[in-house]
Amino acid sequence: MLDLIWLIPVLPLAGAGINLILGRKLGDPRAGWVATLATASSFLVTVLAYFEMLGLPAEERSHVVKMFSWIRVGSLQVDLAVLADPLSIVMALFVTGISTLIHLYAIGYMHGDAKFSKFFLYLNLFVFSMLMLVLGENLLVTFLGWEGVGACSYFLISFWQTRNSAAVAGKKAFVTNRIGDFGVMAAMFLAFNSLGTLSYHAINESAHSGELAAVTATAIGLLLFVGACGKSAQLPLYLWLPDAMEGPTPVSALIHAATMVTSGVFLMTRMNPVLHASYDWVPTVIAVVGAATALYAATIAVAQNDIKKVLAYSTVSQLGYMFLAVGSGAYVAAIFHMVTHAFFKALLFLGSGSVIHGMHHEQDMRRMGALRKVMPVTAFTFIIGWLAIAGVPPFAGFWSKDEILLYVYANNRGLYVVGLITGLLTAFYMTRQVIMVFYGKAKWNDHSAEHGSHGDLTPHESSWVMLTPLVVLSGLSIVGGAMQLPFGKDFNFLERWLAPVVEESEAHIHETWAYQNKYLLLAVAIVVAIVGIAASIVVYAKSWVKPIEPKVLEQAWYYDNAASRLIAGPGAKTFNLIAWIDATIVDGIVNGVGKLIRNIATSLRRVQSGFVRAYALLISLGAVVILAWFFLRGALL
Image 1: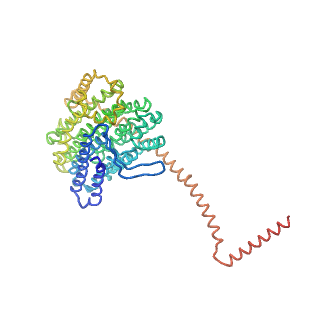
Image 2: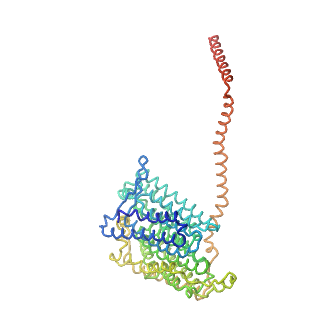
């Protein structure tokens, strides 16, 4: 199967092609089933490739398949090749697996939409792009997928483009990601200029051997981190992700849970030897940005009332945790949390979509309450996702988040405290969401009365097509942590699996990790989660304490507003000035030269009258002038 790994991205591309040609004829729901089958087939191929690779010795778990020669320009030789190794297979497994569930869910969620087949066309293209990103053998193939997911995210976020907010959100995502993409392109240029290659293997080997200078490794690492901040929504480029909630809920789950937003973490892990070869302060910068993003987004989430925006800011916060792990050198922990986060965050997003669907497209949590009575399956599965993200054992999120905190504790105690506070806030705001949506008074009764003229607004449970992915994801959110448990080498399966990719770069952290404090830190993490849950119950369930939700947190510390004002005010004036300079001065010079030449040519063209007698006269005059010249010249001499 390893020779057929090219099928992993090609199958979703084929599904997109079928829907492009036959989508309208297939219609609802057959177009959705075609797209789902294409993604499920890709998942099956990935599973078979995984089991084949599992049977190989660790040192042989790397297989490159060259699809064709892509670019041959001078010394730049780039193949369109895919790489199967432990990291890419892990990424492909959860990307295809979660995407299949989201496709299945979307068949029910998008039922009746006028652009049903087009939606699944975009979904398949997105999965194809994401798989090219994670399976690319070199930076340029990865960048092909990197740009592909950016374009598809624009199409999907602004899918309902008749809503101005959706159109604006799509443009914001596109533009913000372009800023990050500059960093990736500059890193590619620098890597090629320094090493003459874009192949991951060659670049990482140069970093391991010391051939890559520390200053060059630092520049490449930081430039890639700029790109990662854009794709993975880190400060200051996180702006696009909360607004991306304007897309249909399956899009929110696909982009924010399992795929696009994890691209930056994947790229940092793929290039871990380069980060290890850079100056010591580079990982510290990454860890600080990750910790700051995690805490910042968590403070905002505690005051949001839109059910999807709570989860959006939660995603930003959890991505911050992953970068905190990367900056601490704990690449396995970062990938571990990426996988478990895909399970429980996809579950939460799809659960929120089920609530929105059952609530007749209402997203304000203040209009919900007591939904567990009318939506029992959605409520049960959502609660499992809540316990996982809140860090309650034995759910998956506890093990992955705790492993990050263990390594951060050994690396930087100050950042460890930030991580604990973030964990406390996560448990608090997620408990708040569960209470407001599924417990308390049924406020949708009041909402139904307010809008009685529009028909019955009583919530209802979703169809089996939407509930099946919730049940599967809830199971994964319970048992997913078993892949990496802190009870010794026999339980560290993920660490052993990823060792060929990250072992040399992680060697130093195993020497400094305080193993004797492991169980104490586990206990601290549990206490923090319990305190966060209890505090939220006291405030929102028991109402013993009045909620404190400052306007500044509801407005995301006014950062988004400030950025919008800057772009709309001085930014717009600057852009207009640049446009005026370009149109008036630059284009003016170019157009002026063209007009001058045209005028001269127009004047000279009059000489070419087309009359023979005129040409004879000119020849005669020319002959007279020449004779006069020779006569005068002879007389002067």
